[in-house]
Amino acid sequence: MPRFLSNNLLCPGRAKRERRKEARPGELIQAALELFVEKGFAATRSEEVAARAGVSKGTLFLYFQSKEDLLKAVITESLAGRFTEWNEEFEAFEGSTADMLRYCTQVWWERVGATPVSGLTKLMLSEGNNFPELAAFYQREVVAPGHALMRRILRRGIDSGEFLPVDVDNAIYTVVAPMIFLFLVKHNSTWVESDIELDPLKYIATQTEIAIRGLSRQPPSISPAA
Image (cartoon, rainbow, N blue to C red; front, side, top):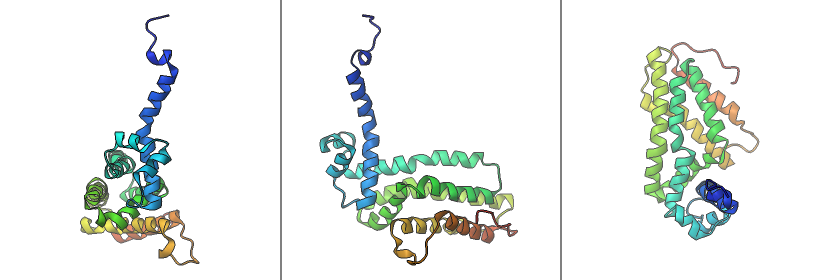
């Protein structure tokens, strides 16, 4: 038998177990995201996460020391770890700042709002005060870099002469607040009249155009998406 054959080739069962082991953190993070959004952080038990991921509670704690560490991993994997990519997109964007803002809000919905990840916003709003360390982590890893990126977008428009010289620290909430509202509505329809069906993409397009028109030195033509 050739000596260069790896142990995994000689023992395919072992290779399968190793691949499974490598996938476990991701499976636990996905299971935790689903349960935290469905039940809330406080109400979710560690053994429930383990069961949904198909492992024992002891296996979960081999990868994450506590339920708090698990939620931090969920936040990092789902949101915080993506800001490098999003800032690179900012650097590469070649259109107007108005078009950048349209792109930003639409893509944010597609990549975050339309997915279970949007439930993390509701989770932190409803339970953050009960878990100050987690709230501080979310603010540092998600809120701060998200606001920093939005400031960069608005300053780009101001520097190019497209936007009025507004106070960007306050103006960012013109864009952020409607997105938070949409996340809340997605997970709790109490905030919308029962006879109104809110179309997320139309809502985003409308709110974005209102923000752009308020920021612009010259009122822009309405985007066809609005």
